[in-house]
Image (cartoon, rainbow, N blue to C red; front, top):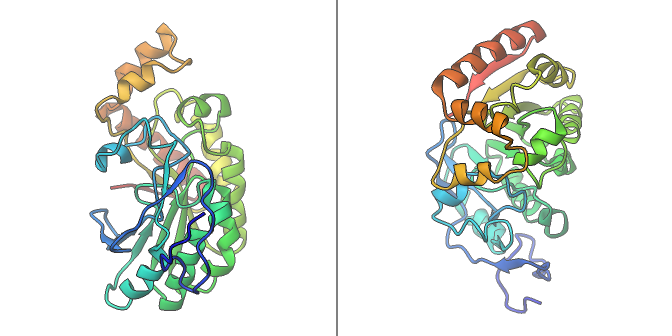
Length: 282
């Protein structure tokens, strides 16, 4: 039980009991400068991510222990209080979830992301959200009260068995597609992020994949290439899917600019067919 007053919530609510495997992280600033195109500031309520996607580059970016990244989730418990102060002097678009998933499982209990959204809604700051979780639909009521907001859901492929190899923690692709459908139905500006593009996963029956995306009603798709960091190939090679034949093709294409270019051209064709706009991330 946390007994200290950490100014944890903007409305003055008492700090919650930390779930098992979580730890308190006190931060000095809520909004940090973002280097990502279109985003002025980054807001990350958690340190680490229980989704444990094998391709995740965030631990390398933050010089964090990859082995602890998914097992010891840091909770920036004083974030909403600091955010209420930051938004009075920091103007611009806020990116929610740039190096963690703001809707990972712990959010269901703690609602730290929702507390931050309440602050951003009152300040009416432009917001861009990225997640792999359908929990984002819980906050549609807050999104509707914002003048400028977009919500992206990452889906790297449609074959659940293949996707699960690289993303052991997040909900299934179909569940994420259903969340996109709900966002679109409610009039929220939404997009699908296919990032990173994974050889033999993202391009597995690509026509079916893009047809499923289009069926949600979304009008925008964003692609991001694979960014290889030290140790990632070792993680990939340890996956059960890596039969000799799979590994040969995967190794040939992962990180390849030619592979990404060809995927982009095919995605562009399919987006045009389905009336969707294609963009390249970062």
